[in-house]
Amino acid sequence: MTATEAASMAYHPAEHHRFEAAGKRFLYLVPSGAVFGLSGLSQEIFDLLENCPLSREELTAAVLGRGYALEDVETTLDEMEEFDVVSSGRPKKTFPSLPEEKFPLQRIVLNTTNQCNLACGYCYEYSDDKIAQTKNKPKYMSDAVAQAAIDTLVSESGGRSQLHVTFFGGETLLNFGLMQSSVEYATYKAGEAGKTVDFSLTTNATLLTEEIADFLAEHRIGVTVSIDGDKELHDRMRVFHSGKGSYDVIAPKIKMLLARHRTNSIGARVTLSNGVREVRRIYDHLTQEFGFQGVGFSPATANPDRLYHINGTKMDQVLDEFAELAWEYRDYAIKGGRHYFTNVSDTIKEVHLGISKAYTCGAGLGLLGVGTTGDIAACHRFVDSPVAQMGNVMNGGIDHETRREFLENHHIGARPDCHTCWVRPVCAGGCYHESYINHGETAASNLNQCDRIRGWIDLCLRIYGEISIENPKFLERFDDN
Amino acid sequence: MNSLQPLNRKARKLAETRMAETGDVEALQQKSKKHGRVYYPLGCTIAFNPGWEVDVSGGTAGLCAPVERDLFDCYLGCAWPAQVPDHVSNNPDWTSKCNAAANDWRNVDVVYP
Image 1 (tube, rainbow over the protein chains, first blue to last red):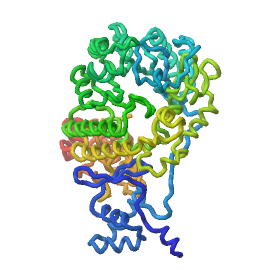
Image 2: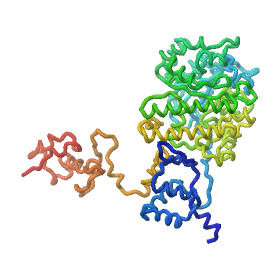
Image 3: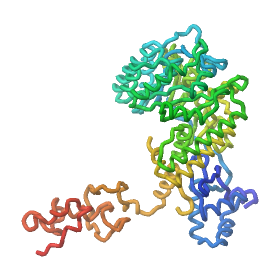
Image 4: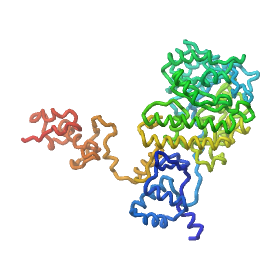
């Protein structure tokens, strides 16, 4: 055996991220997404290999000197190799495979209108970073287009039994009539195909009425309300075209909705921007004043030149507040209580399931967006844009060739920037729309966010580790679906 | 699996796969995970089903073909009439205190002809 061959046969730690929680050592394995606890023998073996690669004989000799039985060493080493905690031979990168041809559709997002009664400064549909081209296009989606979209969803859903339709805008409730007819049509068409369908709605809440709330409750429609906190913070960006803030209009309507609609979840979605960054204050207001049982935060998608863009230092402060809330989530979880910070619960769910993504999200894969013309885009953010288009529901349906090309270009295997990053099983490169706004290219990785994403996932891993030690039963809620 | 503990669901699946590939047949002897429920084994027993085998809890109810199942198959289903008292003429009340074999089998007493 040559020296090179000997070196290549030596054991070395497999790709991983190490973290500690409650005084214990853990490994997050890449690319599997499996989390293992290390102790005793496995920890000693791992520590030795982290210092330098060793052959099986060298490793066994080193550990036997510390008082372990040969059989235990052999078994533990076999296990560690089998679970890809350590590996021998040359390191090899493996990536999830490309999806099957005509990947079955699960969800369709109907951009029911490209009009909005608000003029939020950061909106990606209307602000400086707008990419949608809506000139000379219908302002409202017609029943014919919505029905063709639903037909596409059903016919392209393959063996899936549970389908989903999301109503989006503009302001969705400007076209409430379409929503009513579409719910009826989709339920009928899905039933006809032996499938079920459920619905969700994103709204700015300005047009909510008791009748609408009752309709949402009757059809178990999940609702996401866009709201940015208390009056002072909310009214900084979420304003009517006149410039007047919308908080006073929506506050009583949201309370009415939460009181009347209890058949599905109603969550708050906060868009953080340069003037709206006080995470704790916003969270407390939305959970205490309104009683939201799910509050998610997302920084506004913005080119760094925009005034509402949150710069690096300020973003770090935002993440400090995220961390504070996340630790609070941990405290609640250990006591078996409920905490409503969905950024952390969503991440912990992905960690718990050990998700290893081939794609950042379902865009172009199980999810498609449809605009008022019937044009199909990878997701709602690309509706009416010049990129990520893939057919028209009124004219030939999904363009499978373009969709395939999109999926090939956006696969984790086609993103070399991500290939050395331990967080890729969860991140997989980041939002295509963010990439397009920041780098002009949908398939570019969001490299400006990498450190923060790694920091956030590391934090959630530590919290996950602590909960799994202190109150493992809490995590059972993430086992289903 | 001692010093390397699977934590999340993916890790547990990996570990279970390994157990399935390398483990003993003890999986067959595990009791139902749903505690507090009477375990009713279904299906037939194999011939010469041994009464000496025990499951992980030291009882017999978790075996793939437990003796309690055998008991009722023989007593009512008359598959093995020679092994148990007959319920038609001589011992009609033999299992009257045994509503659920897995729980109450101790109430089934020896019969002296």
